[in-house]
Every structure is written in structure tokens, then in C-alpha cells.
Image 1: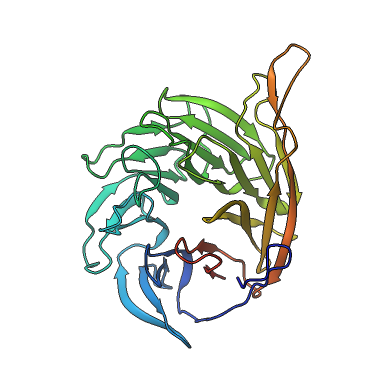
Image 2: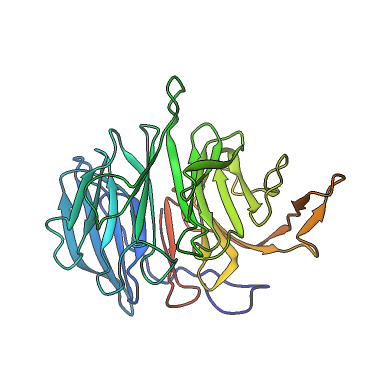
Length: 343
């Protein structure tokens, strides 16, 4: 993303490369000009490759082929000196990898009975207070939290009650990690449910249904008191929730926007500015948005109970990059405006 002020930024495709496999996720390697790509070969094996930015082209620096296709990845729980990548695959395994010696995993666990759809990490890279943890969501209906320093058992497990239908979990996100004790996980499901799990009290703190499957979730920052949560969905809608004040009846306020005229596959906040975020379109486009806070973020209802007031969202830029859906996107935390995406 080129300079020019947020009022009129330019989104320029600097480098492109065609790959011979399906890409499911991309992530910048912290403190480097390299990024990792994961996905699935046509023969069903997993692809894990590292690319480095050159002046005129992207150069392949590491290449590994795994037994099972890889669906998602994160660096969120790793120490900066290690930069271990955590992945979730199609057979339900969650593994961490040293990208310099990626033949065998550093840690491996059969996390779920079915595909690991989504993954997020916190407590690593100096982001968030508390233990480094990884959360995974699966088609088997469960959301599990892992500490890779411990044995192969989850430190928390969220699943439907006995007799309830199992819903496919499509998105997970950590947030509210501003003290040693506080930490929440947001999970989005195929039926439109968004659930907020409080890991301190091990309870469902809040739930809401947005009527269409939840494709992506992200807090604007993981390491602060909950501020905003964005949920993207099928049918070209996304929802921005103000998470500062929870009313006992109204819950958290939100504003809905339509974009892309297609499924919105995900959302990513700009690391250097939490009020700016990108949404990923199924029509091959990306949209840049700016959140504007209201004059007053809270008011009192007729009973004197405080409730939140949501702001507005403005589209800053919209660019079509190709004909295929934008399946993954990541901002560089080291250079503002630099991003990588797959489509």
C-alpha cells in the first residue's frame, strides 16, 4: 500500500508469483522480508514454502512437502527468537515447525477429529500478557486452547452440550489479553453464531447470530482491553462490534456494512493503526476500511444502565486483484502498508 495519506491511499501489486498448489494461508515471518505460504497439492499432500522478497521477484528460499494438506497457520504464540510456525491440517493435527529445519515438527498433537479450519496464537512475539497459547477451531464443533510447553492435552476445550448439534467452527481469535488473568476467545460458526468464551471464568460471556456463516474474525488488538471485533460472513456482509461495554440485554453494539458483492473470506487489521482494516472478497477484490469513533462511546438507558454506542465505517479503497477469491491476507508488522495475499 503506497503512501499518500489515508484519505486517498493507493494499493499497488508490487510482486506476483503463480504457484502449482491451492493456497490456504499466508503469514509474514516476524522481523524479516520473508513470508510463509501453506496449502494443498493436487495429490492431497501439504505445501509449506517460504518466500523472500527480491527487487524484481519473489524467491523461494525453503520448500517442504507434508503428508497432509495444511489449512491454516500462525506465528502468534512463538518466541521472537524461535519464530516457530503453528499449523492446522486436514486430518485434525496441530503442529509447530522450525522453518529452518522443517522436515519434522517441533510439536505435534491430534487436536481434533476432523479438519482444523482456523488457528490463532497469543503470548508470543511480545504481544499479549500471559502464557503463549494457540487456539484451534474445527469441523468437529470444538474450540480448543493449547499451550505447547505442556503435554498434548488442551488447557481449555469448548464444545456443544450433550444433545446439541455440532456446528462447523470457521473462525477463531484471541483478545482481551491485557493482564495475566484476562483472556477471551471469539469463535465463529457456519450457522452465523459468534461466541465469546472467557478463559478466566471458563464460560460463554456473550453470543450473537449474524444470520450467515462466519468466515473471519479478528480483534483490532489482542493485547488491550477489548475494543473492537470484526466478523465477516457469507453474502457480502461484515459486522464491526464495539466491545468496550456489554449491556446485560443489548450486548455489544455493532455496525453492518456490505462489500465485495460476494463472500467476505476474512479481515485483517493494520498493526500500526487499529482503526484501519482490510476485508477479503470472494470476487478477487480487497477493501480498505477506516473506523470512526462516535462522540460518546457510552450512554445510559432508561434504567440507568450503561450501554455502548457504535461508530461508523468508511471505505477508503477498493481494488480488484484477480478473478479468484482472496483466500488469505497478512500485513507486515515491520513495514507499515506492506502486505501479502493469495488469490
